[in-house]
Length: 235
Image (cartoon, rainbow, N blue to C red; front, side, top):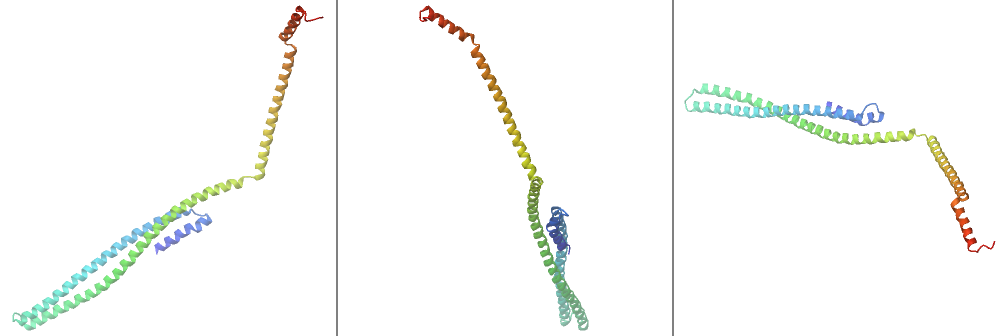
């Protein structure tokens, strides 16, 4: 049955295809669900057709039963007329026999239709169970599909991260860090050298200023002259 083939196909989508990586399990699962929905549509159509036949059979049984009762009533009626002298006895007997023969023929039709109706009812029950099973399976696999999509998304992200980590060469990374450290140290040393040069330049300028500061020297001379005028300088 196609229904079970679909189940097997979806099972393969989640197991074999996912493991072997030959086919996309999500696409296969989605296709399997679409196929199941097609099967569901066909099963519902078949169920409706069989139900219609079952209803028709029950209607036929009612019709045949009514017809059999009608032949029974007619047989009784002609016999009553013969008994009342309204109809010749031989003719009445002949008509009653024919009515009873028709009644038996209709009874056979009733029996055959009842058997057919029973088979149809059993088919309806099987088809209803099949339709319900397909509906439950579709619902189950739709839930599984949502979970599978989430798992695949996480799996891909994890795989890409692990791939990037695996592609990193540990020795290259250490070497790169050492080069960066060395460069930083070199830049720091160079900065210190420039600072030392700047400081030395400032010290020379300071000494030169002290030696060549005429204002300071003039003040010193003026002070000595003032002391001399005041007689503080014995010399």
